[in-house]
Image (cartoon, rainbow, N blue to C red; front, side):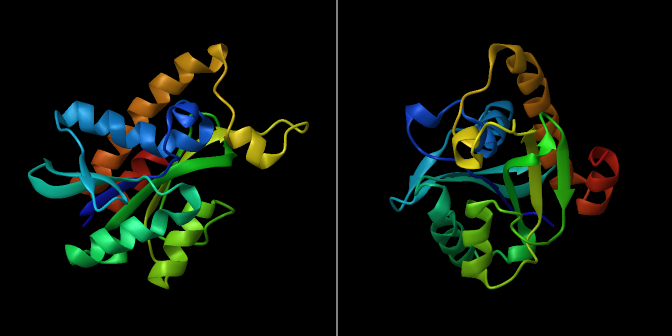
Length: 187
């Protein structure tokens, strides 16, 4: 059962609408849908306790920059006695086409440094994740430059629709369980 949904991103207005902040966008939109506001958490990020489908769940956004995301996640999980298998980490993935959602129970970080840090600090790859497609990366772009670039005007409509689908997928992971959510959203 998912008890903590984490959105990965970078703090600051200059990163607000970049591909690398897809995780923040998902969790922010979920918070708006649920009518809740984030609170500061130990200078590490923001979080809020809410309910989805009658189940208590935390939403969190580490504000330590992407590569140090695990600091807040492991601290929050330790404090509230949440196991790694009860965490859903939402983040961008350049290997997936823009707007596609992929849910997995476990696996490697796949080149995503925020997820890599979380895996390292927990000492396990057994952490569910929701990967949000922000690709494909054009050949002329360096990966880091691409994920830190803003979405084009032509991508914004698809982005907004896809973020809503990702919010539904995250809710489904809590309400329906990972297997059913994967069957519904992994296409």
